[in-house]
Length: 434
Ligand SMILES: [Zn+2]
Image 1 (spheres, rainbow, N blue to C red):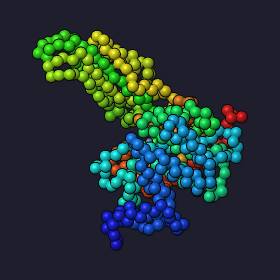
Image 2: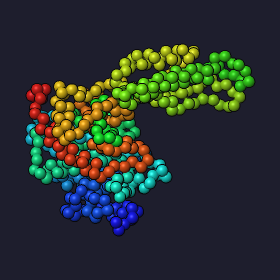
Image 3: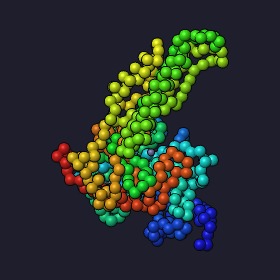
């Protein structure tokens, strides 16, 4: 080869192929000059700094407006609260009485520790293997562009489907979705979309399979407050806050050990099937020689849908009671919605989704999402939602250093949606719809 790796990286990084000639259909071979236009578009979207704490949503919305124009589809913008806009590009079906298909993606990405990255996390550098590095390559700017490019291809082929397809781009998923999807699902404009089925983000799978998520764990963020008798640091004061705190920490972390053991000793369990507990903050004390009158411990707990939440809270109450007098707790976050999307053939949306994947020889691995995504708000209003990011043969690097996606895996994902969208948008009218 004429170029060293560094030269190739430099080339592809510097060229910024925002505009590509029509010749670039060759699949974007590394080092070649003709990058696939969908890959160039993906890299352009990655360079927009929609990163917290101050995401440039303006840049993303301008980009999406351009996409809508290119697709010759209308785009609606709904400001759910000041500075927080949900954008919806709509491809209207031939029978608007039928429920629509929602393709959701969030525009924002989490911050980076740039010093730990191989490349600038917002330069979308592509290496000699075709790996594209950047924050959002997996979570989830790839999926947003795959939706757009699949629709572009289908439109170019002159396709038209019975059901309407909505491409939705939401803000603030990475900070809890409170000023994004959580507000929007209660908005009249959301109702007006008449959604029947939603696709949203999933996770990469390092193997040959594709992971799909049909439910999520409930996040509970709890602070346990331990009051106690104050006094001089030189004495055996009775009933101290620290003694209670120790018992609280033991109860929570013993349970953590049990759950960790359960996960590690069972082949069929994944992270989404067990309860995780982590102590994330400890507060208390004023001086070296003063026994404090209170100490707090904060835990991040994630509870799978198989756990009875009333019983789980009763257990927390028992732990508090056993640890001593006057202990209280409060929640900063306490999700209780345990709705699952059915993955039985009785759910026509799942049936067509899984059959279409099977026809493409894709093996689906069904799991509970271990963290939280905007799907929980969609399921909470009673709609079926599947978390799916078509990325196999890819290490799970969301929120991690050096997040990347290979361009061939990315391009294959567009083909996956090119099959899925016609199937979903052609699902015959269901008895509930007539
Ligand atoms: Zn995400």
